[in-house]
Length: 269
Image (cartoon, rainbow, N blue to C red; front, side):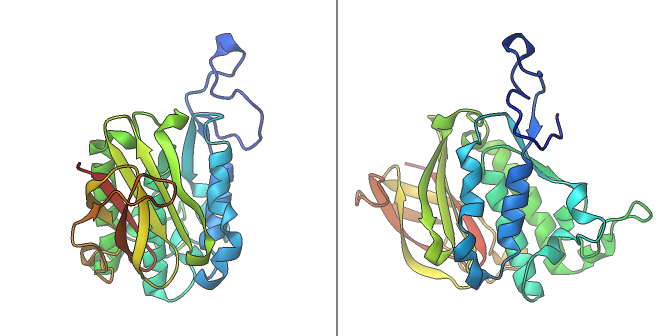
């Protein structure tokens, strides 16, 4: 795995094709752009929407890892949690939404120690992690979310089987900056999963979402679930898509998007 920050081509290309032969390359551009986006207050994020979408312009030029590495939580940069604006509830909600967006995004996930419990203090090699934070239900909620994301990822082949194939990804709407919403579909030809992230501090009720097929779409992840100490805004487990064309997709469903939350919908036919 190459921790390499330039645009030199062919880092993960096989050596017999003139590449360096690494299995993966850190996507430093995605890391800096996305962390820059979530660092803005929600009311200002609409002006920085491109920071979350630009990575898809080059996502398939290499086999990428999406790194939230040690470099970002040391030397005065603060913890992941501290990078999020607002009060503590908004910080935790934004971190949960960001992690679920990352898990659904093309690329492999790298989360440095402490991120999975929403470590408050900056990391230091001189002490252990602040495990006592898990006595706080809100920090335990982030740990539970990361565990559930891993389980959902493993059981959803659409998220990894075609990870290096552009055919496995399609934006639903990459341009809804006014609502701070990003939506896309991951597919492997068998499964289809829609990820919708709302980085606004308010819920969006009655949001019509274009989908590639009519039928039932199960809500498999909701970062605003009360189980993670969120506000509990959601879709009661599933939505029903009809054949109304929307967002250039052949079907659509009216969904509820929780504040500072990411939801995954898995097509069940």
